[in-house]
Image 1 (cartoon, one colour):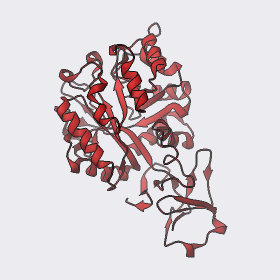
Image 2 (cartoon, helix red, strand yellow):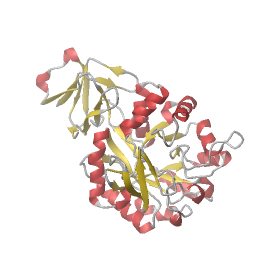
Image 3 (cartoon, rainbow, N blue to C red):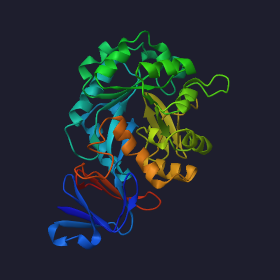
Image 4 (spheres, rainbow, N blue to C red):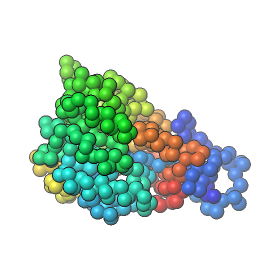
Length: 376
């Protein structure tokens, strides 16, 4: 048995002080400090007054630390997993891009193999961003491999695909929606020029998620609200890249006011340049230049981010003045619920995996535990 003492423990409904977290691979108890018996523990970690929260869950990330999911080598996801714990992330969905199918299949096979490994942050499955998107709103995705939605190309990987981004206006009929529902795959709407009405129709068919709200979609207009308007007007889950580049701080505040915090999920959408500093990098076979925390293609198009999850939390807190409990939920419990994993991860509760992170008031990461093992 291990213990964390002197921490401000972030629970879904409150911040608990003067209590001790007892854990091995799972949470074994939360006991008042006066009832704690140190002799029952083999190791005691002192949080020294800092916060203790569930490990962060990043459901949309292409790369970091010099590697990209589409590199599709065994070491790629190991490198990402080992680097992500320094940012408080204990679980993630490696996210693919629009490529030729052989390359996508190789990436999916690599992700499947990595799901059984534990060398850092855990791989929960795959987020498939493209190729079923709109060429008009491709963002930094290469256009030559964009195709109509076809679930038959994915049948061999239904067990590991957790999220698929699609442009709903490009999907004919309901077969694709039915297949995703049968396989418990989240349909996320993005890289799309869908109208408000087309978006609502897709939500009725089973879509439940929006890929990086505002980015790579038709801008909001008061007479043509589009996908953005539908996202704000319904309880659909919305990803948000809170790097103050993809989404202005004022828009972050407006989204927070318009939506229930329970429907907001912070992501990074980071690329291999994340944690690498300024300079040249790569995304989807295209040269990327990073300067002052902004990653762009040669034509100036924003190309993913170099954001980390702890900085996303810090930015959203500063921009919205939202309660810490709510913002932490956007990076923990909300993504866990979206994936149907809230009984295992996403909050500090008896029997859940001991994925824990200790951080200070500025969201600087001090310690990260994955399944009870202190990795960072």
